[in-house]
Length: 86
Image (tube, rainbow, N blue to C red; front, side):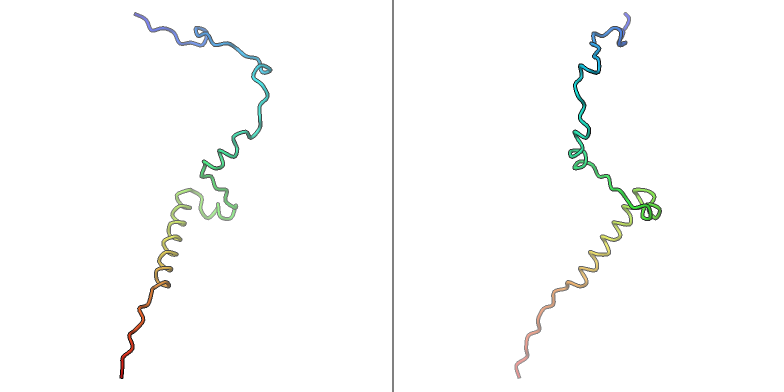
């Protein structure tokens, strides 16, 4: 038994003219795309220094680790000494 053909000629798909499709709206989903995407535009000088996303991620991760370590060192809570009575 042969498979049924799935060519476009065999399907009942109506053809529309451009006028029947309506007016297209430029940038209709731009806000939604910008909120859902993680695209960052780099300056040309920075792009030369970090050519791949892996390089950018590695640099940012090391910067984050450095700042967290620096905060841990500088924000050490000191326990006040008890006064010795004489």
